[in-house]
Length: 412
Image (cartoon, rainbow, N blue to C red; front, side):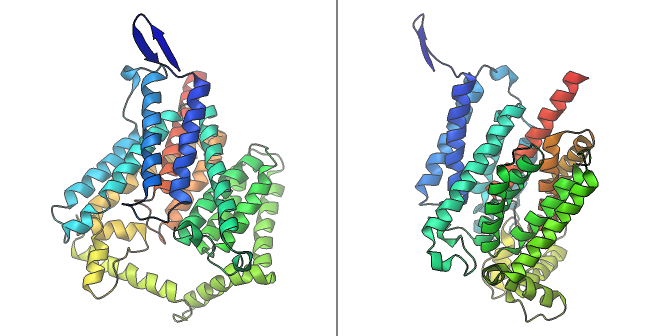
């Protein structure tokens, strides 16, 4: 890595060394995002250490791995999130509470830095595979950590994963992303041992009691199989995948431990939507916040009340400081129509690219098209604009489509 020649000390990365160092730093960073959350933002020294380590390693690689500064450009996903970040900064000027608006800005800036580094790294299929394998490795570590730290007697009590310090819905999201990647590698790439990790991550996701994680897992199975229409015995594979989903639901209701973890919550959700509003206090509260976000949006529909000000306005009404539990309405209430357009145009752009590449037979599109579609669907029930693991998915998806376009141009 170091070379002294003609009185100059030079630092250079071979691809193999660069890949190992990058993947190790990214692995540690992923652990800080999904596993070690028992400290608040100001005291989480591990997070900030690995954040600067990862950004530093990535920056050195960009400069010294041979591309040269002349070839560095600003990727579109950085421009997109950078524009959203700038809108959030400017919204402090008209925000109901400047303090509330300023609070998430550091987190958004960190997302901007990390996702840019991820895009620069993923410049070919091999490095995309390294990124996916590292994500899986961190998620597997998370699974082991959860079961080791949680007493056996509490494995099936529901809401497993709280030992990480993160909300169990966020833990469920990390596990569902692991499930989707591992199922893709098993089903599309033919690495059949990955089915074992798929099963383990699916089971752990169920034990978190996160309904969104469950639905993301089962829907991803159908989507990946359905979009892979070029596969042999396509109809048979699709029918088998549907049967597996049905079997999963049956097992949840037939196995007492699984029913206690997630089945009870499914029943309460069904009762809630059948007009028994007292059956699920969580959904009732979410509905209240969503209706409040709508009312705040109609008060200032163009530019909103300022980023992160839904919680502030909610507290003024005698409630706790919280989020709207809906990414669309959180942004609408905070940043209005302008914020919705600035944030969601990139989702639409990415979906169009992924649909085209799926039709053109690119295998990585079979992974990322379901992932982005699931984000579009489930952001009705979660706020993601400031979540690192969600934006890592988006950045890697954009990087994958860019790699595919480069391959098409070479063939063309």
